[in-house]
Length: 533
Image 1 (cartoon, rainbow, N blue to C red):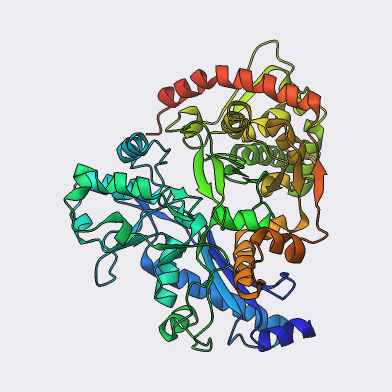
Image 2: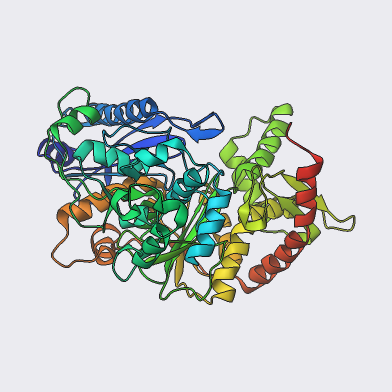
């Protein structure tokens, strides 16, 4: 405690702040990269005029509250104030659209990644660029605004992401970390910058040429991890710390996306590593040795914070339906006055699931609370179905819902591993699915047919990953790579628990997924048969 107190007083602590979908969180770390204080602010996006958004007031009051709670945590634990820091880094949910005019005014409300209003733009750009452009990408939002002939497009002088906006306002620098930039526009990993050929192709589009700007002029500048991205201005310091105690001049790391911070938090930035984040949604990222042979709409191409190519499978649904069923068992136990702990219920049900049939005995479940592009769903309906002769028991039932939580991820990753023959040495799992020791890990290993590691520190999450990136910028040795820095200075000696895929489990999941694919027609029919209104 005395060491941490001195470290904070000397201004040597490093701060990472990440804007998640439901929470803004700050993590303060020491010289050994261990968290020593934190603060959080809960927030929710809102649907306004058909657009999922957060207001500028939400953004700034949220980050100020988050920062204040971190300083209160410091005061409570160590009895000191935060006045200076060795470095700061901001990260956020990727993609989305924030467009500004020459006066720096926001032209239209922030359009988040959650909006699925850019289908026409995404399809046209994917065809023109011969590159998969998902709907949530910033360039899809910009081009959709062009297709819609929106009045504001003519006035754009800059557009960026949420993390890029925060960084700009605190430093005056219009920059992005390369991982975050890769969710705005395709990146060329060889030059660690936007793909110049694709930039020219976009700028040559007839509908684009009528505007006074060029895309290359209104995009943020791309930086890689370790580069300096500006310093906190006097105005920026007051914007972050409303008490006025925080000093200006603190160096800031390139602002990153939650994909990149997740890679850092799980030590999976090296080639042939990957990570799977499994919570409300689920996504897998694998760092590639070479480019994919084909374009797949199920696979997003992004990068690590140093610009190496990453294939990403993103699924909207993971544990929500699983949690709902566990909640039902909790309700049942309460009805009988058992008063069981939820963690105990999860543990018992999950471990019992591992005694079930490897193929779930003929049971199939869909966890689709919302749409799932990987299987062609614009909307979803949670669904459980079985044949009359299926082996219906509790173990098979729970195993089915565990499989369902990763089913669409497996479908996307099968393209990566079985069609593109991408190799991965280890996948690092993090998120709520892995809380019950060994269960989610073994199911993921079976789904991916790859070794899965779960590390003690994985639960620290994105803001910790962003703090590590800021520390890397501040402390790295000359020519030291991010991969080497993570291995030697952050994760040294932390191997975590590694689980190899069980051949019979792999075979069972493969059999289950065939039944799952065959039942997608039933899932689609349920969406039609049970309209939301």
